[in-house]
Image (cartoon, rainbow, N blue to C red; front, side, top):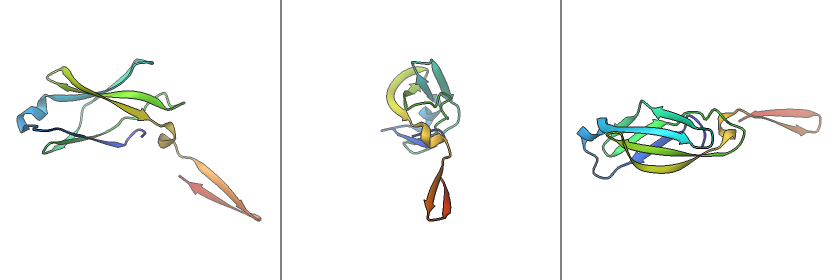
Length: 104
């Protein structure tokens, strides 16, 4: 996945009053890059937010999504950034004397 992808976190037994006590952070230990998620949507036991674009996009990078409850880390999950999902590529196909341009 790349930046601006929708990430969904499903909790079991999440109470309405606990939603305000949750926070999320994306961290990459090799470069020390961190991003705090400030806006997320919640419906029932589900919380959704958009992943930020990773600034170092030369190769696939493994990061962590960290869930905090009242400031304490309660869960950590891996997330793989794939840089080709953050870029637009142009592919050229030649058929005889004509070319077709495809934007992905």
